[in-house]
Length: 500
Image (cartoon, rainbow, N blue to C red):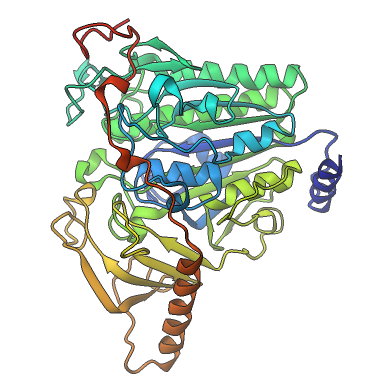
């Protein structure tokens, strides 16, 4: 009861008194860049619902994920901890991965269940499947799950239809593995999944969950990690051909349509004034796909790199009648979502080292962030090198730089995989307020003030790394084809027999 009273007092402080606990809807796009949304300046993206949330809510200009690829960034969002602590490195999980998000990690869903919340996830999990589905969301605090347990290109996906008149997707989807399954709770509902009806299934699932939770007078947490706009794009009949931006734009529009359906349901159920809606993206755009890979706007490079385009994301917070419209330039991160939700729900924080901070002051007062530092870890991190970069206030220092195949095709020679690993001693330092594109390293020799900044950055790095305990790598445990999800267990020959 004490936690409930504390939460109520906190909400009343910010003008959000309610007889019931607040609800939470977290929307997480896939490979969406800083420059991809209409409200972030893209001239041809059609995102009316997200644009409305941004116009009536709080839009972030300095919001970060913790990794330039999927699995680590998702782990950090759900646990409030850098992926190094939970062992979600290096790289991402695959259909037959042996490891997954450790079951002793506390997710947002597990934290909220202790407070009587109904919890559900729809979409891309990508935190492990494991033996007999041991790492699925229903093992990590979610009451219900509908989705694909990993990226939709991690299986044969040439059957995708993206754009009239029935033009098939092209791309480098994985072959020699099982077709992509649709999982409901812990059972495979469909294999291969029908991508063109998938978004409608998600929308129906999400609206039903909100409606039933409201009917049962239960506070709820809905997590929607979308497959859109990861390559190869797909879009159902309601979105295909409707945007000005081709397959990527259609995919983005279909995501936006689902956001609109969820918001309408919140209004119909009377929960709109008691729900925090938070939108962000897992990492930057996959520039190697050119016009079908997303756009990082004025930020440097994209997915796979520790430049700003790889980890600085669009983010929007909306709570009708509670969060005042505006734009914040305060630094924040996916790490901060769990502590913020815990505070608002009156839930106890997990008894582990957390890397996030409560964002209440930013959200409700447009005030200062508690976050002073942001760490940048690469895809293939190890303890020998640790951080690649660090941001302290408006300054960012690169200790190491490296390109990535995900960010190929751009004119910038620092972005592609051919940009080899480099050590910078002294580090490259950029003023991200004056130079968000990271084009002009600050001179150290004739700038005593920057020398002071450099020492502060080095101290912050040393203090952080002294407290970092690397968890056992879950991804390095490898893969076993026998663990690939199959709707006909024990059938032969696998993977072609996994069809239902």
